[in-house]
Length: 465
Image (cartoon, rainbow, N blue to C red):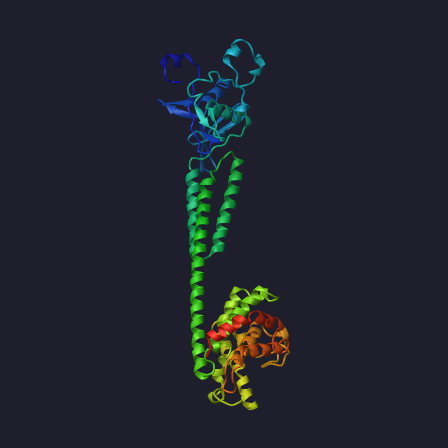
C-alpha cells in the first residue's frame, strides 16, 4: 500500500489499486504506473505481471514519424502499449467472467488446487480500494477489483487499446474546422456542399477509427462527430426556417405586385368600356367558386390545386384586357355591332394575348400566373364544338381556365344590361347556358354551374351594376 514502512519493507512487490473512472462506463482509463516519491510505482495489474515475469519494464517509443509518443511494456509474448502518460483503455468484462471463491473455503481445502493453476489469483477481495465500487455499463455497482482483472484479461488476449493524449484536442479542433466550413457554405446558400462536407467528415472519421484500431489506438470519434452533427442539424433547421421565411416574403411580395398589376389593368379596362363596371368583379368571384367546386368534384380535380384556383381568381379580371385596343366608339356604340365592327371586337383576344406575352418575354417566360392569364385572355371566346374564336379550338384543346371563364363571362353578360340589349333573368340565363352544353360550353363545367346556380345568383345580386 506504500503507506506503512514496516509492511513496505517486508513485501517483494507493490502496486497502487486506485483506478480512474470513465465517462463511458464501458472502457476505463487504466494507468500502468504512477510517480510516487520520485519512484515509478506500477499499477496493481502491472505489479501482478511483474510477479510472474521479473523483467516487465516500461519503455518510451515514438510511432508514426514522431507524431505519437507511447510507453510500451512486454509480458511474455504479449505487447502492452500505452500513451505518453502511461494510460491504456481497458474494456470491462462482466463480473460473471471471473470466478470468486471464499478464502475460508480455500483454507478448509474445499477447492481443488487445479482451479488456481495457470491463473492470476488475487487474495483480499474485501480489501479497501479493491472492494470500492465502480458503476458498470448497466448502472450496477461492481468492486474495483474487476477493473484490474479485466486489464489482465486484455493483456493475455492482446486486445488492449490506448488513446493518444492529444486525441481529444485534435478531434475537437477538426470538429471546429468542419463546423466553420459547414457554417460558411450554409451562409453562402451552398447547402449541398455543406451536406457533402458533413458526410465526408463522418465517413472519413469512421474510416480513421477503424484503421487506428488495427494499431491498437482508440480515436475518440465522438468528440468530432457529436459537435459536428449537432451544429449541422441546428444550421439545417435555421437555414430551413430562414428559407421558409424568405420564400413566404417573396410570395407575398409577388402576390402584392400581381394584385397591383391586375388592379391597374382593371381600372384601365373600366376607363375604356363603361359597360364593364362590376362585370370584372363578378367574373372574378364566379370563376373562384366554379374552380373550387371543380377541384373537389368531377374529372378535373388533379388539374385544379389551390395555387391554380388562386391564379384563375386573380387572372379572371384580365380576360377583356384586349379591349383597350378596340376603338372607343365601337365599345360605346348603343346599337348592335355590324359584322365589320364585330370582327374588330373579336381581335381583343389577340390584343390582350400579345400584351401579356410581352410581359412574359420581358420578365419571366415561365411565370405560371402569366401563363394562366394568357390562356384566359386568348381562349375565353373559344367554344366546345370548335366554332369559337380566335383559333377555333375544340373540346379539351381549350385550356381548362379558358373554358371556365367562357361560361362565367357569358353568364354575366346575359344577366346584365348591355348597350345593345336588356338584362335576362337568372332563370333565362341558366336556360341559355344549358342549351349551350356540349356546343358552346364544356358539359362538365355546365353541370358544376347548375350545382352552384344559387351561389351565382347571390354574387349577381350582391355586385349588381
